[in-house]
Image 1 (tube, helix red, strand yellow):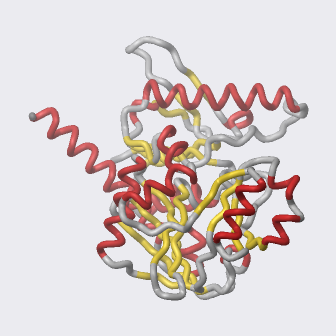
Image 2 (cartoon, helix red, strand yellow):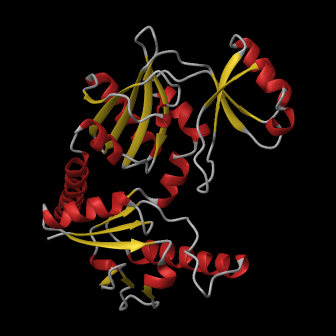
Length: 326
């Protein structure tokens, strides 16, 4: 049977839910590497030379050979190591964090020969909001009129062009605090000159309407959730209705095309219907959250994702066999 490894945070519910499903429902060998808890639960052995296989220790304490792994879900890998009695000052913690990050990435780049979900560099590039907006537009999706800037005068001019109101949202943000999307008026902008000039942010036209979509793109398998919310940022109130939803075939093909253009295996996309019923593409989260959509809509995304992982392994093995026969 197959072997899958999930790289994510120690308390990531997605990692545990998918690991449990892969093991109990699909009979898959699945290891969990808690990337921010390696200092307490990790293990690492690498030697140069073709005769040596890299070895890692899972969060549960089991050693495995990286070369035996069929697929890795490279989910959450960049956070700091947890605080321990040995890591209580910023310098020590940063050194240890960086050494673990570099070692894990290096091991996988050197020894792993299976499927990445997603490859590290495509996660980085594909998740850049400046970059992926134009990629979405290039495949025929409508995107909001957008500006990314910290130039105060340019932002004021952009806001005036859009009738005196814009939304502002993060490019990357911080893991220390969730940041929501906000609506700003000209008065708000005038009061915030110093803050605006600190760093770039995304300023966009307001898309009116109450029908939001969270679209879980697992390869070519599209699983959409419709969210009926009168808030601009529906994440601020999860008591609103969530429903499974079927997109038309043309839209699904365009979403798959976005993944292909960004070289992503998966992505969680946010879209919205405006008040005229036209669909607007907002962004893709390369490793976005999706299990809350299952809990709130009843849509079985756990098995959908597990099946996608297994189908991806099967396809990869089939392609390798065909290459050998050719």
